[in-house]
Image (cartoon, rainbow, N blue to C red):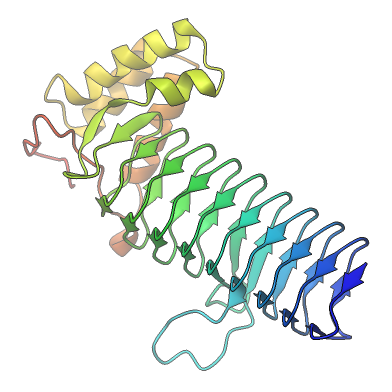
Length: 275
Protein backbone atom coordinates (compact mmCIF):
# COMPACT_ATOMS: atom_id res chain seq x y z
CA UNK A 1 0.00 0.00 0.00
CA UNK A 2 1.22 3.49 -0.84
CA UNK A 3 -0.02 6.44 1.24
CA UNK A 4 1.18 10.00 0.65
CA UNK A 5 2.09 11.81 3.89
CA UNK A 6 -0.67 14.40 3.32
CA UNK A 7 -3.46 11.86 2.71
CA UNK A 8 -6.12 11.66 5.45
CA UNK A 9 -7.44 8.12 5.91
CA UNK A 10 -9.81 7.32 8.73
CA UNK A 11 -8.71 4.44 10.95
CA UNK A 12 -12.36 3.33 10.81
CA UNK A 13 -12.21 2.81 7.04
CA UNK A 14 -11.73 -0.74 5.75
CA UNK A 15 -9.03 -0.73 3.11
CA UNK A 16 -7.99 -3.61 0.84
CA UNK A 17 -4.51 -4.53 -0.28
CA UNK A 18 -2.20 -2.66 -2.68
CA UNK A 19 -4.17 0.59 -2.75
CA UNK A 20 -2.55 3.93 -3.62
CA UNK A 21 -3.51 7.23 -1.93
CA UNK A 22 -2.15 10.45 -3.44
CA UNK A 23 -1.57 13.88 -1.93
CA UNK A 24 -4.40 15.38 0.13
CA UNK A 25 -6.92 12.65 -0.67
CA UNK A 26 -9.50 11.99 2.06
CA UNK A 27 -11.09 8.68 3.06
CA UNK A 28 -13.80 9.14 5.69
CA UNK A 29 -15.28 6.85 8.36
CA UNK A 30 -17.59 4.01 7.31
CA UNK A 31 -15.89 3.48 3.96
CA UNK A 32 -15.02 0.09 2.49
CA UNK A 33 -12.47 -0.11 -0.34
CA UNK A 34 -11.38 -3.24 -2.21
CA UNK A 35 -7.94 -4.27 -3.39
CA UNK A 36 -5.84 -2.34 -5.89
CA UNK A 37 -7.74 0.96 -5.94
CA UNK A 38 -5.94 4.20 -6.83
CA UNK A 39 -6.92 7.62 -5.48
CA UNK A 40 -5.26 10.64 -7.07
CA UNK A 41 -4.58 13.99 -5.40
CA UNK A 42 -7.52 15.73 -3.68
CA UNK A 43 -9.96 12.88 -4.34
CA UNK A 44 -12.50 12.24 -1.59
CA UNK A 45 -14.47 9.15 -0.58
CA UNK A 46 -17.29 9.99 1.83
CA UNK A 47 -18.92 7.94 4.57
CA UNK A 48 -21.33 5.28 3.39
CA UNK A 49 -19.32 4.31 0.31
CA UNK A 50 -18.61 0.66 -0.51
CA UNK A 51 -16.15 0.25 -3.37
CA UNK A 52 -14.89 -2.89 -5.07
CA UNK A 53 -11.45 -3.61 -6.50
CA UNK A 54 -9.20 -1.82 -9.01
CA UNK A 55 -11.18 1.40 -9.20
CA UNK A 56 -9.31 4.56 -10.18
CA UNK A 57 -10.51 7.86 -8.74
CA UNK A 58 -8.87 10.89 -10.34
CA UNK A 59 -8.09 14.39 -9.04
CA UNK A 60 -10.91 16.25 -7.33
CA UNK A 61 -13.54 13.51 -7.66
CA UNK A 62 -15.96 13.08 -4.75
CA UNK A 63 -17.57 9.67 -4.27
CA UNK A 64 -20.46 9.17 -1.85
CA UNK A 65 -21.26 12.84 -1.24
CA UNK A 66 -24.36 14.07 0.60
CA UNK A 67 -27.48 14.21 -1.62
CA UNK A 68 -28.48 17.64 -2.94
CA UNK A 69 -31.95 17.73 -1.38
CA UNK A 70 -33.46 20.72 0.40
CA UNK A 71 -34.40 19.99 3.98
CA UNK A 72 -32.36 16.78 4.18
CA UNK A 73 -30.25 17.23 7.30
CA UNK A 74 -28.28 14.02 6.93
CA UNK A 75 -28.35 10.73 5.07
CA UNK A 76 -27.11 7.31 6.10
CA UNK A 77 -27.70 5.96 2.60
CA UNK A 78 -25.03 4.12 0.65
CA UNK A 79 -23.07 4.51 -2.56
CA UNK A 80 -22.10 1.06 -3.78
CA UNK A 81 -19.45 0.84 -6.51
CA UNK A 82 -18.32 -2.27 -8.40
CA UNK A 83 -14.88 -3.05 -9.84
CA UNK A 84 -12.53 -1.45 -12.38
CA UNK A 85 -14.38 1.84 -12.74
CA UNK A 86 -12.72 5.08 -13.84
CA UNK A 87 -13.92 8.31 -12.19
CA UNK A 88 -12.16 11.12 -13.99
CA UNK A 89 -11.40 14.59 -12.67
CA UNK A 90 -14.11 16.32 -10.59
CA UNK A 91 -16.75 13.59 -10.92
CA UNK A 92 -19.38 13.61 -8.18
CA UNK A 93 -21.39 10.58 -7.07
CA UNK A 94 -23.96 11.10 -4.28
CA UNK A 95 -25.17 8.45 -1.90
CA UNK A 96 -28.87 7.61 -1.50
CA UNK A 97 -31.10 10.10 0.28
CA UNK A 98 -32.87 7.19 2.03
CA UNK A 99 -31.19 5.66 5.07
CA UNK A 100 -31.75 2.18 3.66
CA UNK A 101 -31.26 3.21 0.02
CA UNK A 102 -28.38 2.79 -2.43
CA UNK A 103 -26.84 4.71 -5.28
CA UNK A 104 -25.38 1.88 -7.34
CA UNK A 105 -22.69 1.80 -10.02
CA UNK A 106 -21.65 -1.51 -11.55
CA UNK A 107 -18.27 -2.48 -13.02
CA UNK A 108 -16.03 -1.42 -15.92
CA UNK A 109 -17.64 1.98 -16.33
CA UNK A 110 -15.95 5.24 -17.30
CA UNK A 111 -17.27 8.55 -16.00
CA UNK A 112 -15.39 11.41 -17.62
CA UNK A 113 -14.58 14.91 -16.35
CA UNK A 114 -17.32 16.70 -14.34
CA UNK A 115 -19.90 13.93 -14.62
CA UNK A 116 -22.53 14.11 -11.87
CA UNK A 117 -24.46 11.09 -10.60
CA UNK A 118 -27.20 12.13 -8.17
CA UNK A 119 -28.73 10.22 -5.29
CA UNK A 120 -30.39 6.85 -5.87
CA UNK A 121 -29.19 6.46 -9.47
CA UNK A 122 -28.41 3.01 -10.83
CA UNK A 123 -25.77 2.48 -13.50
CA UNK A 124 -25.07 -0.92 -15.02
CA UNK A 125 -21.80 -2.26 -16.42
CA UNK A 126 -19.57 -0.95 -19.24
CA UNK A 127 -21.36 2.38 -19.39
CA UNK A 128 -19.52 5.38 -20.85
CA UNK A 129 -20.60 8.85 -19.70
CA UNK A 130 -18.82 11.80 -21.29
CA UNK A 131 -17.75 15.17 -19.91
CA UNK A 132 -20.23 17.45 -18.11
CA UNK A 133 -23.16 15.04 -18.27
CA UNK A 134 -25.58 15.22 -15.35
CA UNK A 135 -27.89 12.51 -14.03
CA UNK A 136 -30.65 13.70 -11.70
CA UNK A 137 -31.98 11.56 -8.86
CA UNK A 138 -33.29 8.03 -9.41
CA UNK A 139 -32.04 7.80 -13.02
CA UNK A 140 -31.34 4.30 -14.37
CA UNK A 141 -28.69 3.76 -17.05
CA UNK A 142 -28.57 0.17 -18.25
CA UNK A 143 -25.40 -1.66 -19.27
CA UNK A 144 -23.30 -0.68 -22.29
CA UNK A 145 -25.10 2.62 -22.85
CA UNK A 146 -23.10 5.64 -24.08
CA UNK A 147 -23.97 9.19 -23.05
CA UNK A 148 -22.14 11.92 -24.96
CA UNK A 149 -21.00 15.24 -23.53
CA UNK A 150 -23.18 17.80 -21.73
CA UNK A 151 -26.28 15.58 -21.60
CA UNK A 152 -28.88 16.46 -18.97
CA UNK A 153 -31.09 13.63 -17.70
CA UNK A 154 -34.32 14.34 -15.78
CA UNK A 155 -35.04 12.53 -12.52
CA UNK A 156 -36.60 9.04 -12.72
CA UNK A 157 -35.69 8.59 -16.41
CA UNK A 158 -34.61 5.14 -17.60
CA UNK A 159 -32.00 4.79 -20.36
CA UNK A 160 -31.99 1.35 -21.95
CA UNK A 161 -29.08 -0.93 -22.67
CA UNK A 162 -26.75 -0.28 -25.63
CA UNK A 163 -28.22 3.15 -26.35
CA UNK A 164 -26.26 6.09 -27.74
CA UNK A 165 -27.34 9.54 -26.54
CA UNK A 166 -26.01 12.49 -28.55
CA UNK A 167 -24.26 15.48 -27.05
CA UNK A 168 -26.28 18.19 -25.26
CA UNK A 169 -29.47 16.13 -25.32
CA UNK A 170 -32.16 17.11 -22.79
CA UNK A 171 -33.48 13.70 -21.78
CA UNK A 172 -36.86 13.97 -20.05
CA UNK A 173 -38.41 10.63 -21.04
CA UNK A 174 -37.33 6.99 -21.06
CA UNK A 175 -35.10 5.89 -23.94
CA UNK A 176 -35.77 2.37 -25.27
CA UNK A 177 -32.82 -0.04 -25.47
CA UNK A 178 -30.70 -0.37 -28.60
CA UNK A 179 -31.68 3.07 -29.98
CA UNK A 180 -29.83 6.25 -30.87
CA UNK A 181 -30.83 9.74 -29.72
CA UNK A 182 -30.09 12.95 -31.60
CA UNK A 183 -28.51 15.55 -29.32
CA UNK A 184 -30.16 18.57 -30.90
CA UNK A 185 -33.78 17.39 -30.84
CA UNK A 186 -33.51 14.61 -28.22
CA UNK A 187 -35.56 12.49 -30.61
CA UNK A 188 -34.91 8.85 -31.48
CA UNK A 189 -33.09 8.57 -34.83
CA UNK A 190 -32.93 4.83 -35.38
CA UNK A 191 -31.04 1.92 -33.92
CA UNK A 192 -27.56 2.24 -32.47
CA UNK A 193 -26.34 -0.19 -35.14
CA UNK A 194 -22.62 0.48 -34.70
CA UNK A 195 -22.92 0.05 -30.94
CA UNK A 196 -24.89 -3.16 -31.36
CA UNK A 197 -22.19 -4.62 -33.61
CA UNK A 198 -19.44 -3.56 -31.22
CA UNK A 199 -21.32 -5.28 -28.40
CA UNK A 200 -21.42 -8.56 -30.32
CA UNK A 201 -25.01 -8.72 -31.57
CA UNK A 202 -25.46 -11.03 -34.54
CA UNK A 203 -26.74 -9.83 -37.91
CA UNK A 204 -30.01 -11.71 -37.42
CA UNK A 205 -30.55 -10.04 -34.02
CA UNK A 206 -29.98 -6.60 -35.54
CA UNK A 207 -32.33 -7.45 -38.41
CA UNK A 208 -35.09 -8.36 -35.95
CA UNK A 209 -34.50 -5.15 -34.00
CA UNK A 210 -34.91 -3.18 -37.23
CA UNK A 211 -38.30 -4.83 -37.71
CA UNK A 212 -39.18 -4.02 -34.11
CA UNK A 213 -38.16 -0.40 -34.63
CA UNK A 214 -40.59 -0.08 -37.55
CA UNK A 215 -43.36 -1.38 -35.32
CA UNK A 216 -42.43 1.13 -32.61
CA UNK A 217 -42.05 4.24 -34.70
CA UNK A 218 -43.38 3.52 -38.20
CA UNK A 219 -46.99 2.44 -37.75
CA UNK A 220 -48.54 5.11 -35.54
CA UNK A 221 -49.35 2.63 -32.79
CA UNK A 222 -49.89 3.53 -29.16
CA UNK A 223 -47.29 2.16 -26.78
CA UNK A 224 -49.59 -0.58 -25.40
CA UNK A 225 -50.25 -1.62 -29.00
CA UNK A 226 -46.50 -1.65 -29.65
CA UNK A 227 -45.94 -3.98 -26.69
CA UNK A 228 -48.66 -6.34 -27.89
CA UNK A 229 -47.31 -6.35 -31.46
CA UNK A 230 -43.74 -7.02 -30.33
CA UNK A 231 -44.78 -9.86 -28.05
CA UNK A 232 -46.83 -11.45 -30.82
CA UNK A 233 -44.15 -11.20 -33.50
CA UNK A 234 -41.07 -11.89 -31.38
CA UNK A 235 -41.58 -14.55 -28.67
CA UNK A 236 -37.98 -14.25 -27.46
CA UNK A 237 -34.61 -12.60 -27.95
CA UNK A 238 -33.65 -8.94 -27.94
CA UNK A 239 -37.03 -7.74 -29.21
CA UNK A 240 -38.73 -9.28 -26.20
CA UNK A 241 -36.30 -7.36 -23.96
CA UNK A 242 -37.38 -4.23 -25.84
CA UNK A 243 -41.07 -5.02 -25.27
CA UNK A 244 -40.46 -5.60 -21.56
CA UNK A 245 -38.66 -2.26 -21.20
CA UNK A 246 -41.59 -0.41 -22.77
CA UNK A 247 -44.11 -2.34 -20.69
CA UNK A 248 -42.20 -1.60 -17.46
CA UNK A 249 -42.01 2.08 -18.41
CA UNK A 250 -45.79 2.22 -18.96
CA UNK A 251 -46.52 0.52 -15.63
CA UNK A 252 -44.67 2.98 -13.43
CA UNK A 253 -46.75 5.25 -11.20
CA UNK A 254 -46.94 8.95 -10.47
CA UNK A 255 -43.87 11.12 -10.89
CA UNK A 256 -41.77 8.05 -11.70
CA UNK A 257 -43.64 7.64 -14.98
CA UNK A 258 -41.80 9.74 -17.52
CA UNK A 259 -43.24 8.49 -20.83
CA UNK A 260 -41.17 7.20 -23.75
CA UNK A 261 -39.08 9.29 -26.13
CA UNK A 262 -40.55 9.76 -29.60
CA UNK A 263 -38.69 9.56 -32.91
CA UNK A 264 -37.31 12.76 -34.39
CA UNK A 265 -38.87 12.38 -37.83
CA UNK A 266 -42.50 12.18 -36.79
CA UNK A 267 -42.77 13.92 -33.42
CA UNK A 268 -46.46 13.25 -33.80
CA UNK A 269 -48.44 12.74 -30.63
CA UNK A 270 -49.92 9.29 -30.26
CA UNK A 271 -53.24 9.14 -28.38
CA UNK A 272 -51.76 7.18 -25.48
CA UNK A 273 -48.11 8.08 -25.87
CA UNK A 274 -47.90 9.77 -22.50
CA UNK A 275 -50.66 7.75 -20.87
